[in-house]
Length: 275
Image 1 (tube, rainbow, N blue to C red):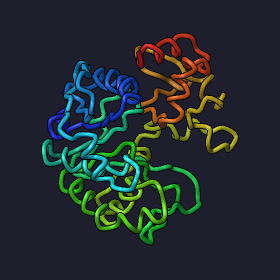
Image 2 (image 1 turned 30 degrees about the vertical axis):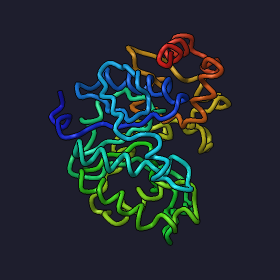
Image 3 (image 1 turned 90 degrees about the horizontal axis):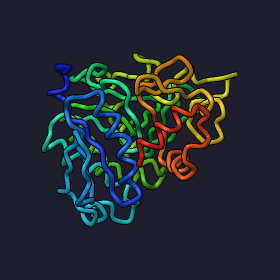
Image 4 (image 1 turned 45 degrees about the vertical axis):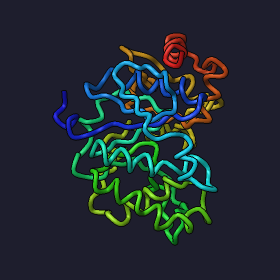
């Protein structure tokens, strides 16, 4: 076990029946590389995934009440607040991701660890009078922060909620960018330290097509390059540390039984992950 494992709690959420099979992929890949459990906040009463802690303490009704007139995804700060109070330092992983590395060994437990887009010059609107160059714009599907920053995250959402919601629909993502700006000296960019950390890493780029790393069905470059070696997905010869599907892309892959993935072994592996 990496010594950082004991200082980091790994958390995700899967609310609603559509998310129950999706979180299986994360749980199954995560458990291959970690001794510590994955904590799953969910409304499912019969979810049984080895190596996981199932947390039913936040009901769907409570999340809806917290979200108010906003979509349910805007209740993520409440899950983070509850997790920080219970479990301490939190690494959040979206349920639609896959993990093929020991995350603890990659992270600085004293800093905010994030993944940025890594490319692009246009400004991304974060609401509340904040714009970030896309290269440094953070994606909230995966990040780690010590407890104090997780608590600050939830406070920031309550402080900026109206201004953010009036401008953008990326609620928690905008809050994460505000948090990073306010604590800029305490931020580590994991995709800069480990270039293969996320789906948009540089080696996925092809002839300057910046979307080349996004694992869409129509992305022939990605779908033809995916390989499986010793239970780890590779893009050609490069191991993938974290695969950042995005829920829409993943749901479409599952619906079509991953038929866009050309390698038979990789395709069968992915089908099995989500069964």
